[in-house]
Image 1 (cartoon, rainbow, N blue to C red):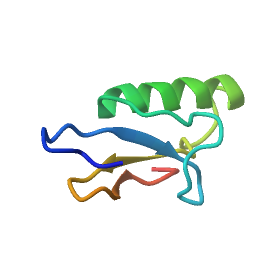
Image 2: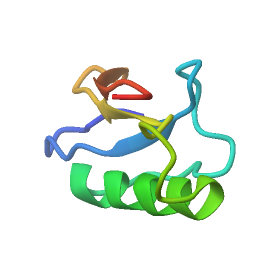
Image 3: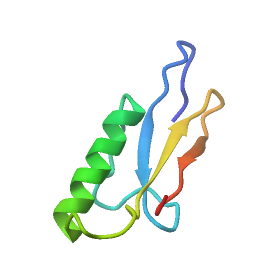
Image 4: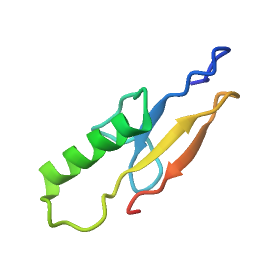
Length: 74
C-alpha cells in the first residue's frame, strides 16, 4: 500500500517473523492506535505479566513499501 500523493501514512501490525499479523490484520491511522490495539490484544491473550509484546509495527512509505518502526518483542 502506498502513502499516496497526500503523504498519509498507514500502520500495520506484524508477527514475530515480520509478516502481517494473522489476527490483527488491519491498517491503522496512527502509531498510537496500532500499538494500543497490539498491546491490548497481547495482554488479553497472554496476560499482563507476560514479557515484551511479540508484535511489531510497520509504516507505509511513499514508494508503496513498508518500513519497520518497532520490532516484535521490543
